Length: 202
Image 1 (tube, helix red, strand yellow):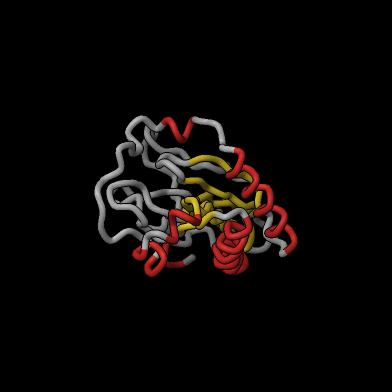
Image 2: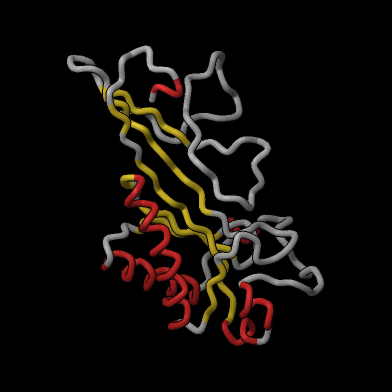
C-alpha cells in the first residue's frame, strides 16, 4: 500500500481477482489433422481464413448447441472443485468463447484459473472438441487472453472505515493477446469519458 502512497494510514491490503478465461473450441477431427496445432497449440503455417472477426457477428450471435453442451458440462465439473463458474458467452473471433467465474481471493483465484484451463481441455475431449488456450492460436485474430477483474479493499487504521479500490484497466498500449494484469485504481483528476471502474466500492 505504501508504494502507491498511504496518506490515510492503511494497515492491510486484501485483493480479489476473477480470471475471465477465453478459449477456442474446434472439432477434434480437424484438430488432429493439423500437426502444428497438436504439437504447439497454435498454427505455424497456412492461409488466412475466409472469415475473420471483422463483423463481430460471432460475439452477438447465439451459442451453438455443441458449444452450449460443453459449457454446461464445464460448469458442473468446475463447481465440483469449488470453482464458481458463472458466465459463458461467445467472443469476437469465430469459435472463440469466454468463461467468467465469481471473483475470489487472489491466490485462490490464480490457482483456480490454472485448474480451469486443465478442466477445459478434458471436458472438450468428451465432446469431441479441442480447446485451445494458447495466447495466439491463430495469426491475425484475437487470442485466448485471460482478463483479470480485480478489487482491492484497504483496511485503514483502527476507528476508520474500509475502502474498496476497484481495478480493471487495460492500458491503451497493451495488446489484446496478452494477459491483462491488475493496475491500481486511482480517482481521476478530472471526469473520465472513456473508462469507469467496473465495480463500485461497497
